[in-house]
Image 1 (cartoon, helix red, strand yellow):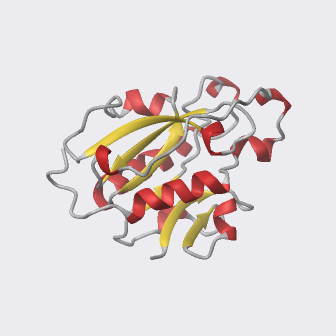
Image 2 (image 1 turned 90 degrees about the vertical axis):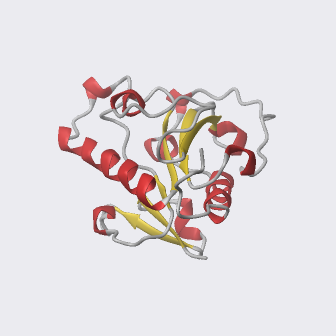
Image 3 (image 1 turned 135 degrees about the vertical axis):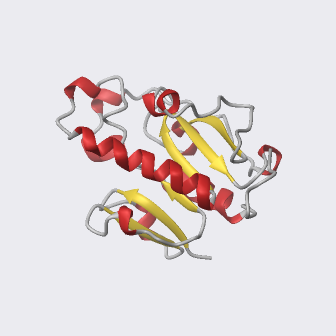
Length: 180
């Protein structure tokens, strides 16, 4: 099974694994027209606490809206910071409940998957029930500071997290109607 991954970093760990079909800035995720469940990592800087410091155009927010609509239509996983304004703007459900698309959210810490420091992240998932999620561990003890990371490290998705998200997508059953 080849899994489309949208909005990846040009040197992403996803590109090291042959079962991912990666869309980076050069390939343009907005050109994706498939019907497969996807993993989406849209840019978060216009939704973050530091959005006022971002030089990105406001139109960059449309990438996250595109990703959310695609995950709701095709199934898949959308990854964004836990405190992203995207969740509130688009009224995405809080963890533990389903929405009308069969979607739900879980909050993870990327350090559980080998990330350099604590990084709370929300996953919006459509096409699978909560009880069918793969197991994941909560036992990493990370003390490194986010400020000490390079820009590439800050946006990196670890191989372990790539594999976890791939396993979620492999378990997705479509169509998604009725999964709540």
